[in-house]
Amino acid sequence: MADREGIKFDGKDLAAFLPDTGWRDTGLPTFPGEAVFRCGRISPSITVTRSMCRFAHGYDATVLHPAPTAMLVFVEKGCSRFDMPGTSFNVLSGDAWLMRTDDHCVGRYTPPNVATEMSAIRFDVERIREALGESGTLQLGAATRLGRNEDFSSSLCGILNNPLASPLDRLLAEGQSLALLARWLGPAPKTVAYASGVSNDDMRRLDRVIEMLTADLTAPPTLDSIATLSEMSHPRLNRCFRKAYGVTVFEWLRGYRLDRARRYLLDPKTTITGVAFRCGFSSSSHFAIAFRERFHCSPMEYRKQTVGSESDDMAFAK
Image 1 (cartoon, one colour):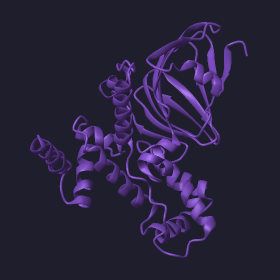
Image 2: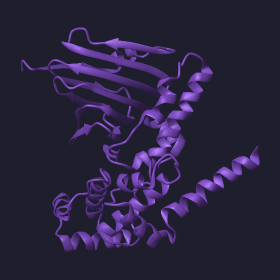
Image 3: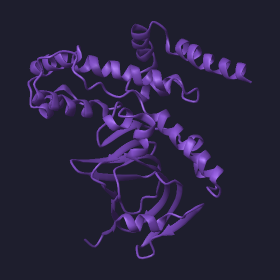
Image 4: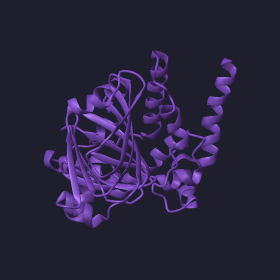
């Protein structure tokens, strides 16, 4: 098509973008428009890329990763569409996404004449397994929206402003990258049945339902769409879910949201309202009521108890 350009990157192409130390700026001189990819190698298993693009024509890129990869993607400006096997989704300014590419392939389309700025931290899945075992990202689907309407400047500046010139620079950046990953990860969905009576086929359907429920907490699917995905009627779906997890579909989702919110409350830089909206609650008051019902304290009280305790321990250690 005349208004659309495309390019494919394989493992060798990606390696050419990455310097051994420091940063490397690479453009796309054959494509009309402006494009700068600033790439850094934090460690053998963690890399970072900040892309700043504005193309005259729509731009298609297909990236073939040399190994299974998990990516934290932060959209600072503009928009793009990502294509992965079995799913396609739009990422917008202020979005934070976690993507996992078990088959190594990711497609990205950037529309014409849209200034887009995006930062991606890529982790070899084996590196995450070292840090987290079989939990965390390894239990999530191919793409999960972790946040919406976020400001990433303060959390990313330590990595993006690191010169990556010395081993100590890179060690600091590795710690910051893993800390960022830990900050955004919530509790892993429970995937072990509490009781017998659910067939293997139905458990596979429920696994797909959980991927759908956790893909975007700010925009939960309807019961109709979940039932269609699982190929079950509403009563059968809730009956199987209760057998497997002890609760109905949306009771499970409510508990998962609250568990994730409790994790986010440990970050004092995130407001209570920000935690509420990130976890899909319609208001901070609704969130506070649900949180108190579950944990017998308000979100603010929980933050004071936990964050305050950590601060006291650090002060005592000094």
